[in-house]
Length: 181
Image (cartoon, rainbow, N blue to C red; front, side, top):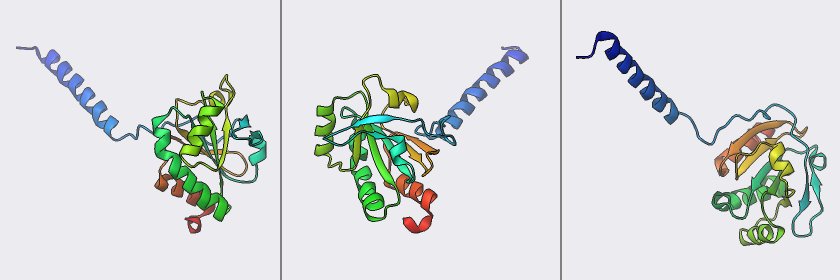
């Protein structure tokens, strides 16, 4: 039979493993605290897709922004395309509450434009530089990733994975009050 200290050591180890698993089930895998939250958004300048002019962070000052990083090869980006388009129509076109901006990363202009047309994206779409300057500045883990910026350019929140209607509505309420929903 195990000596008393060995028994307790094994039992303690099992308890630690069970505790870690239990904690893991309570954590949202799409929530990774970004060191950018609460600070100024990193500046960027991207080439516009489909004949649109280039866009920089300075061009967006004065309006809250949903800044979405995506790619034509990203399966999860397909899932959120309609949701972002709806947000653009509802919160930008109708209510002028916020601006939706998409930045394609690790993509070609042709593939990004084809993806945008296929999924009906009409909000501003830009293309990151080949070296990934914008995606590196924002510390991306992958795509899709989305940031909420306030009108002054402060990063208010970050979402890893596809955005949801409820999540976007929560962000809109956060920046403009519950009457905007």
